[in-house]
Structure formats: C-alpha cells, structure tokens
Image 1 (cartoon, rainbow, N blue to C red):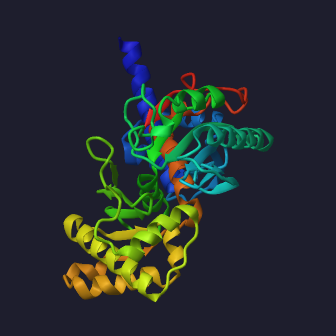
Image 2: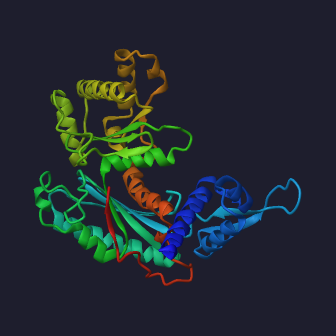
Image 3: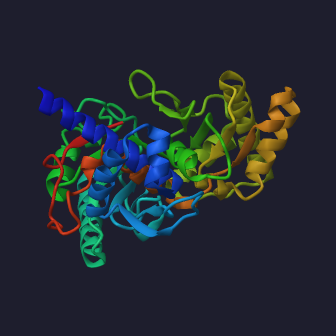
Length: 378
C-alpha cells in the first residue's frame, strides 16, 4: 500500500510541476521548490523525468541574488501533437495542434454529417490517417484526439456520444469504438458550442474572462458556457441547447436554416430581425448569468460584419445596468478553427492534469498508446 501511495503522489507532483512550467513558460527548479514546498531533490527528480519525456528543456541561466545562477526550464510545446476534430453539420475539419493550442496542420472536407453517417465516417477516417502520417513525418507523436460534435454528448462511455434521439440516422453507429480502434489514442468528445467556449477561455490570453457564453447556430441556437472558469454542461449535457428559434421572425428563422446549407443572403429587414432576436437572447443570458463576455461563432459573420455590432448596440439600448459596460459582445477569436482547437484543448487539459498521457521517453516507439485507446466524454 505504501508503494501505491508513493507512486500516486509521484504522479500528482509531476502533474503539478508540469502544469506550472506550462503556465509560466520559463521557471527555475529553485522557484518551483519555493512555490510548491517540495524539496529540491524531489523537484530535480521529477524535472529529470519531464526532460526525458521531452516535455521540458533547459534553456540558459537566470538572475542570481547570490550564489550559483539558476538554470531556466522551458516547456517544450512542440514535443507532441494533438488531433482536434470539428464534425459540423456541413463539414468535417481536422487539426493537428501543438501543446499550446497552435494549429500546425489543417484539413477539411464538405460533409452532410447529420444525414450521411456512413460517408461522413469514411471522410473522417481518411482525414485522421492524413493526420497520423503527418505527425509521424514531423516526429511529434500524437497523445490524443478531441472531437466536437453537433449534438449534446452522452457521458455514458457505453453509448454513442452522438445523441441518437436528436440525430436518429446515427443510431447504432459505434462512433467511440470506431475512433478508438482506428487511432489507438485517448478520445474525448464534446458538444460543439461547449468547445467553442473552452477555446475562447483558454487561448484569449489578453482577456480575463471566467464567465462567458459561446453562441453557435446549430439547428437553432446552442450556448456553450464557461462558469467560473469551468465548462458547464448541466446534469445531462443539454445546458444551453436552445433548439429551434422561438418567436424569432420569419427571416431570422430562414437565416438560421440557410446557415446549414451555407446559403445566406440577408436583406436589411432580415438583418434587423436576426439582430433583434440575438440582442434579446444576449440580454437575457447576460442578465441571468452576469457574464464577462458573449462570443459569437464564426458562422454569424455570414450575416455580414454588421451583425455583431448591431447586436451590441441593441443590447446597449435595452440593458442599461452599469456592469454592461464591462461585458463584451464579440466574434470568436479563432475563426473557423475555433471548435477543432477547443476539441484538442480537452486533451491538453487532461494531459496537464495527468502526465501519464505522455510516453515515458522521447526515444519510445511512435506507436506507443495510452490505456489501449481510452474513450472519455465531456
């Protein structure tokens, strides 16, 4: 039992150090020891392991207040790769990101994901094969895959992560099993709007926003929510899934339907209806949750660059609380790559909490796998 406890503490401490070096980018062993309370020998042992895994490198020396100058440790964000998948209503996109959410490679194809599961899976597997080969050529091993789905996601690992009630054509499709067997990697599934919110929270470094909503126009509207820095999916994964637009106006409804076919032509009257509906929604969401920001998916640019400024102006007219001046209404920061980056971020977050996601040594076989391709949902 003592050995098991010791091993558990070693993994926990390693993950604490890894996350600290990732967050600070550059730090010394002495600073780590001072901030964590761990002994210098413990810190040195863990750092040696992180260097062996290729996650940390020594990059010069820092300032000294007396005595030997400390060696600076730097997180190696390009040591490994993550697959981020966006299975939208009308396309499939696959990104390879590094350990800082930066896209190194990108592929996408048009696909009727909700209507044609069999063909969509063929397209997805073909793109994943390209990703695996590219990571192999780059010599930056894959540690996992995140998948954004146009659906609330089941938390039951035995079920299809795609909601079969909402998308009956996916009934009986063993999506998680197929992807696990094909990639031999950890696989995480998430609802598209939620992953848009995750990407916005993680990678908009200039903005401290613990509470935000991400609005995505999928078969109506879906809200992804970050509450106090944590993704909020609700008890059954349906939080923020608004469905068809109620009382939105005929042209607003037509715009939302047209989004799925990428055929959007809003006249002035239609733009006014969509802006008014979204302003009402935004006002209510901000009042209910006291948010730092409401962020609109890239798809809302299809209504013209005027749409989001109009929504913001209408909210200003309808909601005059003092806090409104501090809450932002804006377009997503990462464009049409937002959801795929959010998907890869789920794997990164789990890996930073559990460094066993990374192979024991950078000299290990590229075909190393973790827990036989575990499947996770969120």
